Length: 162
Image 1: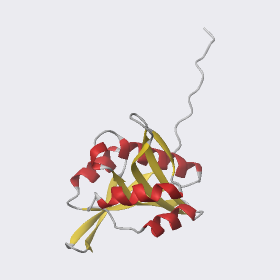
Image 2 (image 1 turned 90 degrees about the vertical axis):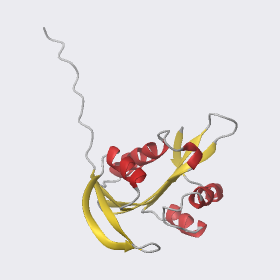
Image 3 (image 1 turned 120 degrees about the vertical axis):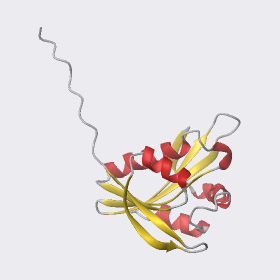
Image 4 (image 1 turned 135 degrees about the vertical axis):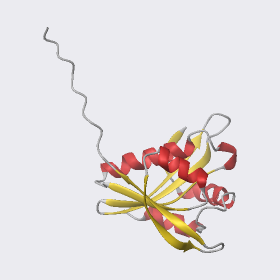
C-alpha cells in the first residue's frame, strides 16, 4: 500500500468510492479538486499495487487552519475494508499535519456509524462531545472526536560506557 497526494486523475476513483459509502458526506469532484489545490487542504489516496496496475482503494480529506485540522471525509472501497487502508490514511494524514504544525485533529461521525468509530478510536481519537441532530436524512446526532498530535519521543542512543 502506498499513500500519496491525490491527483486530478484520481477524482473519478474518489467519486466512485464515495458512491459506495452512503454513510459519508457527499462531495462533488469539484469539491475534492478545490481541497487538493487549497494550500490548507490535504487530500490523500491509498493505492494498492498487489494486483495489476495500482488502484485507488481509499481517500482521506483534511483541512487545517493554524494548529487545528478537520478530517472532513474519508472512505475505503468496500472490497478493501478491514485491511488497514483507513488506518494508514489517518496515520499518514496525522504525520503530514504534524509536520505542518497542527496540534489537533477533529471530526464528526454519525452516532450510528460504529465501524467508523472503531477506526477512529483505534487510531487515537477520543470522544469530545455530541452535537444533537447534526445530521439530516435521517436526523441523527454527531459525535465530535478529537486527536491531540504530539511528536514521537526522541530515542536516545544506548549508553556505551560500562
